[in-house]
Length: 276
View 1: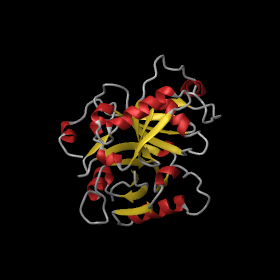
View 2: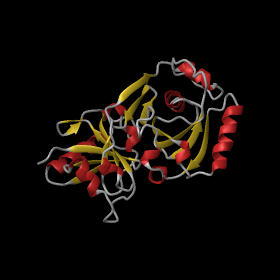
View 3: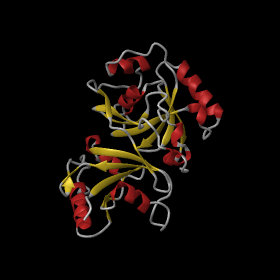
View 4: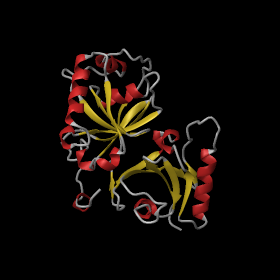
């Protein structure tokens, strides 16, 4: 039998054991039977040690046995099934970022683009956070100098929920803030920066109002401008870093630090020509 894979699919948060490989699994999930999904996804190949996860799932309080379910799904595939669901929901929040082995972007028809190896951008050492921090104080909390000039950025958050947010924080600052801020804390976060002028999913007035508010209030660091299924709506070429014009790609972070999965040095034409 082929090698096994344990694949986390974002944004659905499903973890599936399969013998199809990453490409075969993406084709398997492309439109067809109503039980499959249409739309773009991000697939994460998780580390295995033989026929079991090579990592510990994060604690959930005991309402399910994520490790046992993953081992059982891998065993079912080993004995002949092509796919077997291990976790049907919330897989992103319980899978440590250190378990990520490969990360690919998947278009609706099952076409894949593998991201480059991850680059650890920063470890977070300080953890004290409150709502009234200024953006420059957040920079101090992560041990980085504040930018000489702050620009307002547009981020698409993919996990743990999808939304668009304007922020005057750098990606490293944003990851620290959202994994530490009281009341609105994320256990882990996955996001990308967008090229604002390439997007028409939100009215221009929303961008302008958010920019004005973030510029006028020193303690205002983020402004959510829209909720929705934006991974489907926004093309991959609108992500910063797609053309290697600037550092960018897919950021993942938790309270320990942030890493970047960059785009490959060259985007294959075979990927570019297929619709999302």
